[in-house]
Length: 72
Image 1 (cartoon, rainbow, N blue to C red):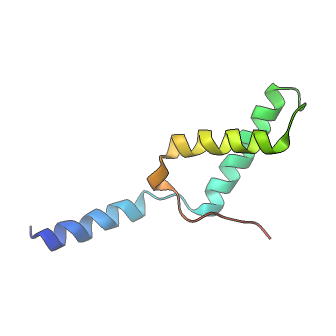
Image 2 (cartoon, rainbow, N blue to C red):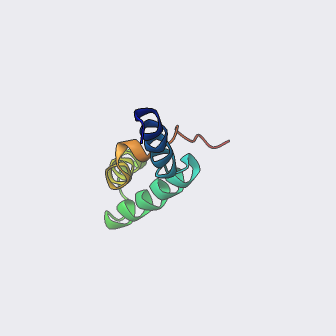
């Protein structure tokens, strides 16, 4: 297989492993809820979100994330 074909095949595999931004957003929202629940919903909502975002991104791997999804 030529180097060019290997490169094209590599990019196709990378694209298939990406999680759509909207799906990532939903995963973060659910994780943030459970993090907040564990602390009795007493604390900073933004801190829960950021912790969940780190957890989900770590789980997915930084390369598996599409562009950020910002809801309307």
